[in-house]
Length: 451
Image 1: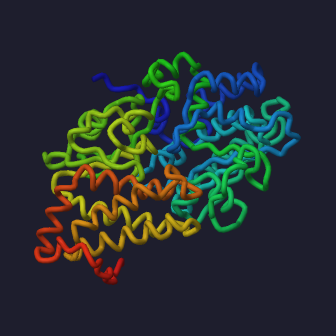
Image 2 (image 1 turned 90 degrees about the horizontal axis):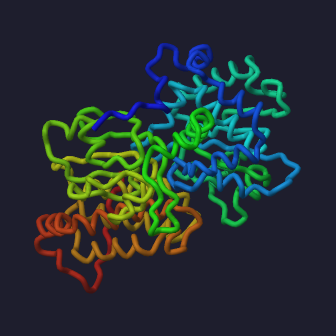
Image 3 (image 1 turned 135 degrees about the horizontal axis):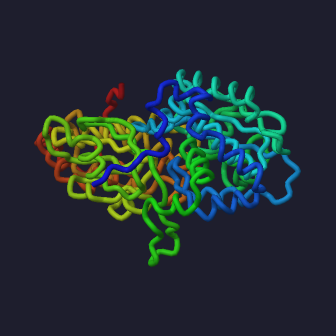
C-alpha cells in the first residue's frame, strides 16, 4: 500500500516547526487571509458543513452541524472552547500538533471562531503538557504580534482573543460540560443536558467545544477545499441514513506491543492490521497479536481475528466496540493476561469517576473489587455474569448517568468477558479450584487492597 502523504503532520519534522516564520514559509495563515477577505461566517460554516468533517475528539459529531446549533442573532459574547485535555490512556495526537505545529492549531481556532462569531477562545490544556503550554503560548504571542489575533485581524472586522487555561488533569475534564465547569473554576462535574453548551456554555453563554485535531482539519479544509477532504476516507453508507461518512485524514496513536509506536497520519478507514503492520512495523519480538484497543480503552477490544476492522467512525461498532473514539490504538501481544487488562482498566475508571451518578460511582467501584478478588484467586464463575450485568446497566446508553464515563468503563468489561470468556473461566478455575462454583449464599466480598 502506498504511504499516505501527511497533511496534518506535514510540518513536524521541519527545524523550528513551532515558529511563525517557518509556518508562514509553508503557506501558513494564507487560508485565514483568504477566508477573511472572501467569505462571511455563514458561508464558511456551510463550507465546513458540506465537508462532513466529524469531530476528532471521540464522539465523531459533525463539526459544521454543531456550529449551526448556536442561537441565531445572539448579541454575544459567544465562546470557543478547545479541548486539549487528552486524558484517554494511549492518546497523544493532540500533543504532537500542539508541540510541533502550534500555529496550525492557532489558525484552525481563528477560522472556527470566525465561523461561530466567537470573540474569545479558551484552550483547555492538560497540566502535564508543559512543552505544549510553552509552544502554544509562544505561538499565541507571535500571532498577536503579527496581527493574526487581537482587534480587526488582518484589517477585517473580526476580532479574537485566545487564552490558555491549564487544567489539573482528570478524565472527566474531557467531557465538554465537565471542561466548562472546570474552566469556570469549579469542580469538573458534568452538567445535565439540555441546555446544551451551544445554548448555555461558558458563563452561561453560547459556546462551542471543539478538539485540537478537529480545528486543524478545519484549517486544511479552508486551504485545500471540500473536494480534497472528501476524496480521503470512507463515504457514507447508503443503507444507513445516520452515517454521514468518515472523511479526511486521521491521526492514529499507536502504542503497546508494536515495533514502532508513534503518532501516524493515515486516511480514515485504514484497517487496524494495516496500521500495526505497515506503520508500526508489526507486533514486537515477532509475537502474535492477541487483542487491540481501537480508540482508547473506553471503546472496547478487537480480537486478533477482528484486526481487519476499518478504523473509521462506523467500523469498530460493527464488531461490538463502542466506536473509533480518539483512534488511540493499543496493541496487546499473546502474552498479555486479559484478567490483568480488565483489572487495570476498571481501576482507571473507578479512580476517574467523579462520583456524581450512583450507577457510575458504585458500578465502577464494584467492578474493580470483583476483579481484584478474581486476581487474588477467590473468583467465582458467577462473578463474570455480575460484571456483565454492571457493564450492561450503567452509562448514557442505558440512560442512567449524566455523561459517558460509565459507558467508557462498561465497554472494556463487556468486550473482554464476551470475547475472552474462556480465558477468564480458566483463570478462575485454576486459581480457585475448590470454590469457583459457589453461587448461593453469596459470600461477602473480601476487602482487597486496590493499591
